[in-house]
Image (tube, rainbow, N blue to C red; front, top):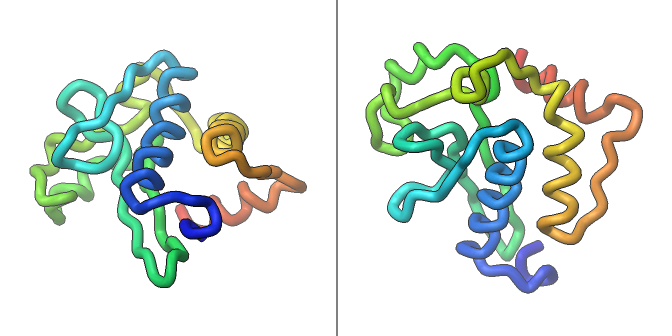
Length: 135
């Protein structure tokens, strides 16, 4: 709830970007923001897109981090109005294979720290949800 947390939409998006930039940095990849395009970039390549919907101060959706996905599918859409060639994956940018399972702990930790919330990985629940979504 943005109202309860004292956040506006821009600040919320900014914090989501901080989470991803911190995650990339932990993997040796320097991410940054690009003013006209929400998300996280590495050089001129976009590795994370952000898309949210806000209704009555409640946010839905969030971010899409390209971890190890096939980037060819971006040829069939115009991601954020950009050409498919700007899209990149974390595996590509880091120079080695990266799997969601290996980064989820840090992602949850950085999300917790950045937003001042408590996130727990629990008994594999998050991995099961992520697996179902990526399936």
